[in-house]
Image 1 (cartoon, rainbow, N blue to C red):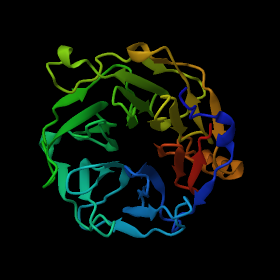
Image 2: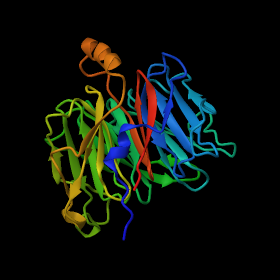
Image 3: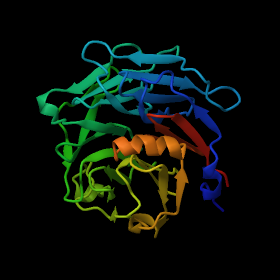
Length: 328
């Protein structure tokens, strides 16, 4: 019998918290490395990506062991991060809100270097307000980016892992009427499902990957969503992530002080997601949330979310990051 991996009752008490290095370090995006030994956090206002290492006790060290700082035109408002295993060393993609994706390679000492190994930028990329980034599993040979302004998801094919090279022209662009300022995206571990957080209209669109026989062997999702979550409690959804074994969907709400969990139902390609959340988990101090949210109704709540095995990380510009455990 398969071990259950989601126990909602355990989510209300984080097992660890990480404070921001400074008040300028507003964390918007978070990602686990492929092995889970490193966590990356994108600080938009300070143009920095912080890297934390997991210690022998399973907790992450309190201080970053490395950081990638903005230089010249690089790391201008980093908004999201994503890891992928690759020949020659793990890759780290950083989404710049100003229409660029920087890709770094992990070196022998665990750092990712000051300069990117490759960059996806330029007019041919069709990037526009590129807020979210994710490698497409299980092969990780494509990179997906959500564009808030043009309301599209752009897919870029990896031409070479060593040296790192991507096609600058998107091989596929997903468009749909259900999109509304897409701010974050996430794939299921098998790569069959794609969720998109529609920040502007308080919904989440979920698409299924097309069968190869119907897409001529090319990477395609859609053309229509299998589910559109229109839950009234969604407030400026920012990021999404699937649990690895059960495909529960975790959604952060930038305009509310909680993240939401939605349960799947059905089997195989008939999988769909409930419109009613399984749970809401309060993340930050309510007084802090209210103070920030009163100034800007789109702010104050959790933003980035990442899942690795039984570990869930959520970050917020105001209080840093919190890590939750999924127990059987």
